[in-house]
Image: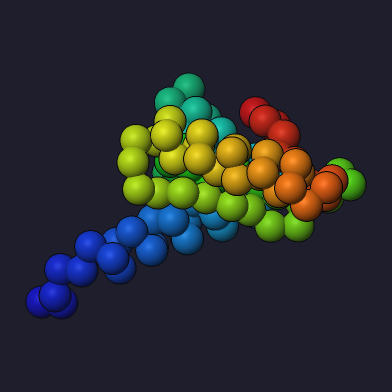
Length: 102
């Protein structure tokens, strides 16, 4: 049996949240919400993580990637990701933002 590696689990979970946000062009929480509201087929989507924490990065209306956190509660993870996006906007004077497309 493979060695239990918390770092590997953390990385896989975070990667899933970020991939989910980027490919669905919505916060990863939106997929979790869809499942909670009866869209159970979303559970079978391979490679995605249906958990709060990943946010799409949108520049000029286009999703160019995603940012995510996965180290605390889901609410704290998403708040940290929002703060990072806000800091990029403020400190770099970039037109980067994440929209809550739910």
